[in-house]
Image (cartoon, rainbow, N blue to C red; front, side, top):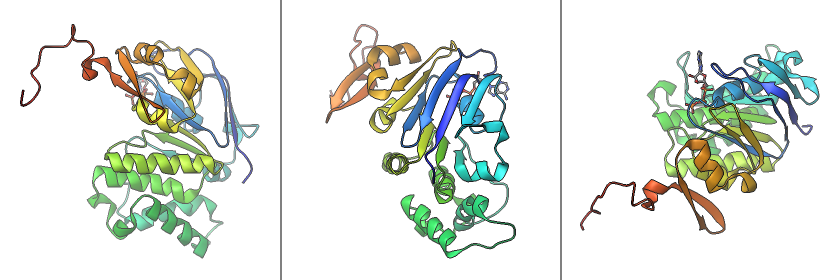
Length: 273
Ligand SMILES: Nc1ncnc2c1ncn2[C@@H]1O[C@H](COP(=O)(O)OP(=O)(O)OP(=O)(O)O)[C@@H](O)[C@H]1O
């Protein structure tokens, strides 16, 4: 697999109701990007534009030097995976059959599945703790299980570029860590991972690059350790945040939740006081 480069050149994805300041950046193999911003900032719109699912309002996107719109469909389907924020089941199938569909872009003509396809599916199921659920009908799964299946479909594809909208949607804490570890593993193995995240602490722990998107159309992109500060994130979300350090990593908590804005917080007795 050749190293991937996704170039955004003065891009305006066309977020309804606003114009994004021209966005130019390069996403490279091995990088793990988090797109952060308030509800409605345009994270999903941008992600779908980077996937080639919609045309930008202005600017260009190049994948490995070629305009995204000029990529042959099958080659693009092999190179990048998109995991949507919500999952829709279009026909009844089992977990295993659904994950096997992730291999579909690699098949030539009417060729059936190969041993290599089944091996990748087994790996993807195991990586997302789905082996025991492999024969279960998709429609019987919980929200978190269904989310893990969507990630396993992409995992089975083995894409060079991951575009993931809220990977930890519906997931409990254990599975949030499992999924972030898996995505980070893929980045370390040479894929480029781009994900929309609401949890700034997951971004701080697992992403080496971030794109901060404001509702005013402004943005900042770059090194996560540099950009993830109390001041920037408080301004981005319009909510004062406080930063603590745990084992050398920053942890952000709304100041109100941390109880540090005593003047603004209502007087509430702690339980069992
Ligand atoms: N089909 C649509 N028609 C009109 N407006 C839309 C459509 N889809 C999205 N929007 C609007 O575009 C803006 C950006 O939406 P988008 O889903 O990209 O934001 P987001 O940052 O991903 O939000 P969230 O954090 O809530 O998922 C929002 O104001 C939204 O209301």
